[in-house]
Amino acid sequence: MPRRLSPVLGALILLSCLLSAPVAADGDLWDELLPSGEYYTLRGPAGQVLLETGRRIYLEDQYLSADNRLYEVVEVDDEARIARAELMEEVELEVTPWQELRRELGLTVIEAADPDQEKGAIALYHTHNAESYVPTDGTDSIYGKGGIHQVGAAFAEALRERGVTVLYSEALHLPHDRGAYRRSRETVLELMAKEPDAIFDVHRDAAPSTAYAVQLNDQWITSIQFVVGRQNQNLGVNRKYAESLKKLADDLYPGLVKGIFYGRGNYNQDLSPLSLLLEVGAHTNSRDAAERGVSLFAEVVDHYFYGPSAEAAERGRAGAARRSILGLLVFVTAAGAVFFVVNAGGFSAALERLKGALRLRDRR
Image (cartoon, rainbow, N blue to C red; front, side, top):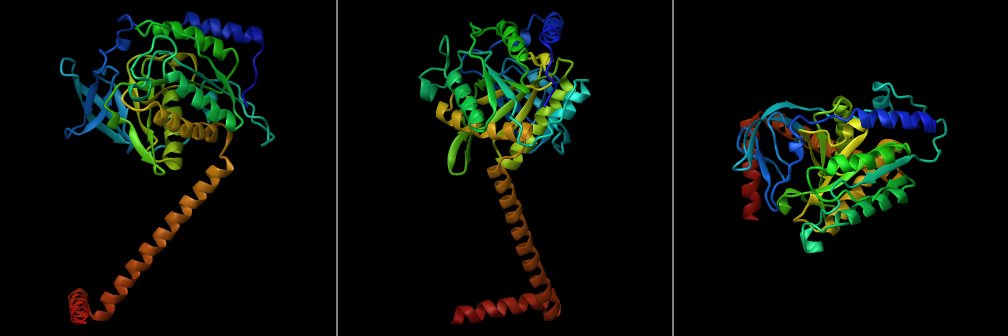
């Protein structure tokens, strides 16, 4: 667990963070909102759709797709809302322990000696409080606590059920405009004063329902997309953190995390190395599906920070067993085929034998 700071030192650090807040030269145009129902489409080198999102896409933005291919935006047509990206590399994801990420920034970490020690705290909040889900809420925006607050509550409850302390702020940062992130910055600082292990800003995207709808375990849920700001001093650590969570999610629930968008802006992630923005479905998905998706993600968060639960460990062992059995079956089948060809006197002779056996079966 991280070393707890004295109140005075904590206050000084928070004040320093507030005073050092990066100021965008473009007046926060990176957070300019699209008209309701409009979205950008990001296409890959072959014209394939990589991403559909209500966030503006800029040159040099990057996207790590579900299959862990990293693309970079090389062309943007703002009028048509279409961007084009080139493949940069195929990424082999790794899980970097969160304590190691803190050390990279010179933050003190004390390892927990007792594995049964009480779990730490995870902080949640909403920069865009009004975001809602049309099929369930009847509209994409509710002035005040929109449907996204119920998704946040489901996330909080799923964490609490796993023994995690949750610091959930439902503070309002209305209206939903370009100044929302400046207003939510104060909420982030207030949460940081309570020293959580991580902070999540819970949103929903604006895109067709098919962009986020996924079926897991015979149940429809929404997938989750991570958003990492490119313009902050913690980008390197934020990237490793996001990739670690995606790697774990890929292992536990393949398809739950649809990708990582590295976009222009900072999204207040300059305040904490373990801060992440979540897009839990889109306005076209049902809120119920979003709640199911974020509840599964709570297990990923718990696993990353506090170790695998018994059920996660069992699921991992079962998955490994299935892979081992499948591998054995493939090996036995291949070995049998080789044995048959060798004993028949070659591939052509083996093929003739097989045809003869099939003709004999048909006559019967």
